[in-house]
Length: 382
Image (tube, rainbow, N blue to C red; front, side, top):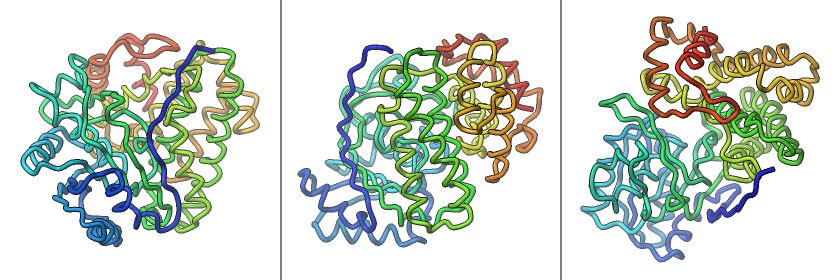
């Protein structure tokens, strides 16, 4: 096990109707004007928007809006948000939405105080040291962005989907109200479940030894997601099932699951970022449902022991290849694709996808991937 220091400053407020407390949380933190950021209008259709602005108004908190943040969020919207924050002089930012909205807000919060070409932060040429305070009302659990210091954004001009990490962008308070997720389309629930599982895998299959407690914790989260996601597909308003998946997403990537084995592998995520950077119509979790089984297949010589343990602990199967196949079958059972063919991605795109992936090299900790490795993994995705 590796040495570690663990600290997570985000306050979590969990429970039914907790969305109504967002104004009080912001007011008690000392802020009177916020940027209210959200997606493409679903929060208005579900009534979440009304609940949020009612709570803000009750505490006399002023707000200006940034709407239209889309899945696989884009850098131009981040720049728009930065300009609004500077012009309006807001003291904090409130994200109402899923991971795309939260990630956009993190980038905006850090960009407000950054001088120069902000994309250099995503290129690892500069760092975010200061950010506006961030508050979150979560409407989709998947990325874990509500309790971690990372953000992923796509530059539309270059098609680069890059990330940065900074302790400055940890949310101050995240409100997790399961009722707000009752209206989620099944596909978003399924793609979110795939993302949660991938976060577990990135740390579970990192090659670190003597992590028995962490492995048991990871396997518990995996079993929970695998058990309760089908329940949500049948009954989206099952409060208990929704709560279990919400907490699974939280603990998959809030740092606890990585204790003693961080930073993890993360090569599958980088490969998926290339995929959805070029094909933004593919949801991140949906892309991971294709790439991760292919990555596991390719990594068999390097992780057979751990893949065998995964197969035994999760599926009750002693054969590691059969365990990977069972994972693919589970993804299919919840409505996800496990092949690029389902999205119309062509084999001739592999060199471009590989080149985009290698822009974030070195890739992987279990095995450092070169371009040939990456191309083979993408080939296994067909």
